[in-house]
Amino acid sequence: MLSKGMILNGRYRIDDNIGKGGTSLVYKAYDLDANNAVRAVKEVPKSRNHGLAAKSAQAESVLIKELYERDKYSFFPNIIQSIDDTDAIYIVMDYINGSSLERILRSHKLSYNQIIEYSKNICSVIAFIHSCGKIYNDMKPDNIMIVSVDKSLENLDKSRKASIFRLIDFGAVVQMEIGIPVALTPEYAAPEQVRKAHIDSRTDIFNIGATIYHMAAGRKPLSILKNKNDFTALRKSEERFDFDGKKQISAELRKLIEKCVQDDPAKRYQTCMELYNDLEGIEKNKHLKITLSFSLLTVFSAAVFGFSFYQYSSQRTDTYNKHFSIAQKSSQYSEEVAEYFSALEIKPDAYECYSGLINAYKEDVSFTEKEASDFTKLLSNNMNELKTGGHYEKIAFETGKLYWYYYDYAKENNSDNQSTRITSSAKWFGDSLTDKFRLESPDDYAMAEIYYNIGTFYSNLQKLVIEGSETGLYEDYWNNINKISDYISENSIKTEIVQLETFRLIIDSLESYSAKFAGFALKSDQISLFENVKDKTDKLKTTTERTTKIKEYIEGKYHSVSDEIERAYLLQGS
Image 1: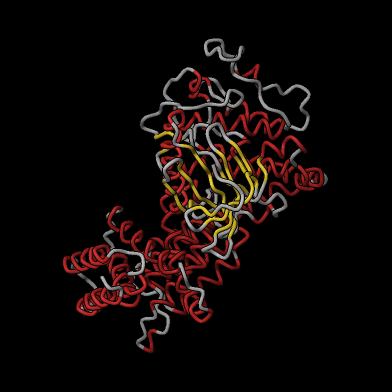
Image 2 (image 1 turned 180 degrees about the horizontal axis):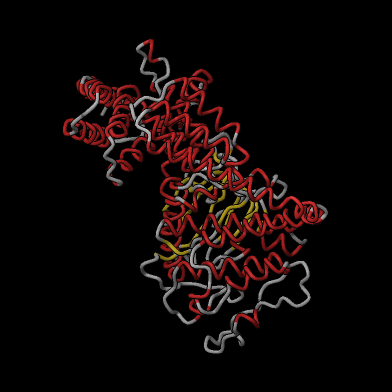
């Protein structure tokens, strides 16, 4: 057993015991190799009685690390190190400075806004776990650490904002294809968990509904077990979730909770996305009700002018359809763009027009400075309508790709300006990184995150090098260029410009940073990445002047990159 003042593994100075589980102890510690950064150390004995617990703790730490590395929205603690000692397993992770949601609920009520925002965040993180092929299987307030109770909730969806909570227990997580529950908490459990029946993502939705009920009602639901330790006599949901006298639970929220906690999984929300959308709907309805009383004052006037407004609206729709139809059918670029702009003056949130414009800009494999300026002004002028209409994140993602692959900044100077294209795209990818986009388009969200991280690398590199604080930057960048390579392969991307710009990015990175990568990556990994790019570039047939030049550029770098990789490991002495 650890004690205060001990140095674990020559690195972690143990402070206080801050927690105790069934088979483990958790300590606060200071990381002597990281300027005394605060860590949490989980100690799980290897004794005969706890042998299985030690193995489970190791498996759990691997799972947490996997989730942490795949998700950059800070829902998961970072596993710093796993230490396999003679008598115990020690899991070193981020120290979470906060309070459990369960403890907070014991001390005070949550505001209506907090309930909705916490619920949306829960939906988002569980949707992410589902996208990883796993079921969380034990959602409850005990497993949520609130790390910033006073954070402005309105700003949570802005790019790169950290989550307001962390999940802290992953011992019950199961693979979706297996679907066998390994643990449950009776107050939050779904019937299929108790019956040891097959579970799926809808089981998590039941647990989420029970958690929302606890937040809204201020108390736990009744246990599903009528008698403790009797797993045969079960309460039905209508008995467990009592809404009588709970005036703070609105009719909309009650209906949402009741749908989550149906005993029959087929009657529940089928995905976290459905649940998330209804939570957003409740949020919007609240704001609508505030303004409704004012709106009623104008009802009579609106009725008087209703018919003329209908005529006006109909004419605008016809005019919009005319502009849009001409743009789609036009064979002349200038006319096509002009008609899309005219259509957007009438319907500023029309996604199909923005998509058509982006495709028009791509047609000649060149997004000029003039086009970029015009398009950026258009988006800026229509920002409120786009966000209200719910299309902004998707358009921001597509705009990011437009800049990344097609932006011809300083073309007149014969300058490629790859870094300018990439850094220009980062803002747009960052804008797309919201919970809403993650739930609607998980694959695009994952890709936007990689693009954003690479763009941020280019944006920050020079400043951090000057400050001498670029440590760790290159390892993240190495992981991201491997991810973008995998994405192109796994999604069978065939577009010439997309493939070749990706290959050029990787080739340039290997040439410039192979010595940095050598500090943590195997030589064989760098060679494998290089050979993969080389093989795919050689096989690719180009059809435009620009893509031909990019291919020739990459081919001209082969010998230089190979030499740089060899030199990097000679410097490392390997």
